[in-house]
Amino acid sequence: MENRLIIFSDIDGTLMDLTTFDMGPVIEFLPDFKKYSIPLILCSAKTMAEQERIRSILQINDPFIVENGGGIYIPSNYFPIYELNNLKKNIRISGNYIILELGVPYKKIREILCKIRAHNNLTFVGFGDLDVDEVSRLTGLTVRNAHLAKQREFDETIIIPKNEIDILRQELERYGLTCIHGGRFYHVIGAKASKGDCVKILNKLFSNIFGKKPISIGIGDSPNDMSMLMAVDIPFLVEKKYGGWTNVDLLNIKKVKGIGPKGWVNAVKEIIQNLSP
Ligand SMILES: [Mg+2]
Image 1 (cartoon, rainbow, N blue to C red):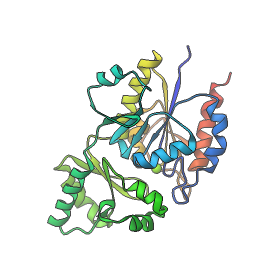
Image 2 (tube, rainbow, N blue to C red):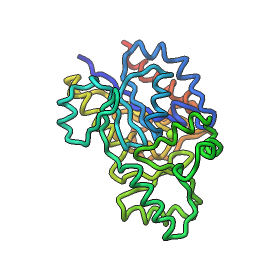
Image 3 (tube, rainbow, N blue to C red):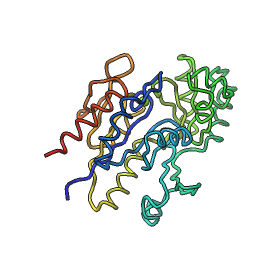
Image 4 (cartoon, rainbow, N blue to C red):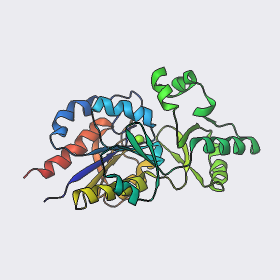
């Protein structure tokens, strides 16, 4: 049997326009894409609530990686339960999902951030300090989507002046947390949570059910996709909102033409073309 493919994809600035949130080119291309039955694993800073909405628009039912690798949501019955138990990770069942928890709980992150802010007289704010209307104004999200963005479990989104970033990073290190840039905002997450580790876990699960290692493809746009892109066989970068590609130090990176969702479609077309005889 030939190798199966899996696609891991970032959302903001990749599958979806960074500021208009448009997914038009991807939605138009979906009927063609679906013919190939390639699992599409969303891998993003977005929350479970936000990604569920996107999954329902795209009508996909594959596992997804939330909040920059804080957790993996797997639909029940997608993988045999013994395969999940064999991973020896924290597992929680919620509704129709089995959740692998890899990150630090949001409540803990908030406590540490508040402590660091007070001790160092810093002025950054997180989504947890803001109400839904303020998050909507800052992000440009509708009030309904801002409500989904506030339902955080493993990652705090912060708005921080440039001169506070180094101080915050140093302080976070002592608590086993880290701060990464996500394209628009900074994110504070457990230092051990990464998109890349989640990709490796899912690759292993797919290998076990396929009986052979799949070929993994990653599509991203910004530095917070690095660990995902490093963990896949074929990494793609789409063009950034205002043109050009983010700087990454990866020899096999493929820089595809097209900003955000347009680039996404070009990357997937390139993969599919190579599948055809
Ligand atoms: Mg992005």
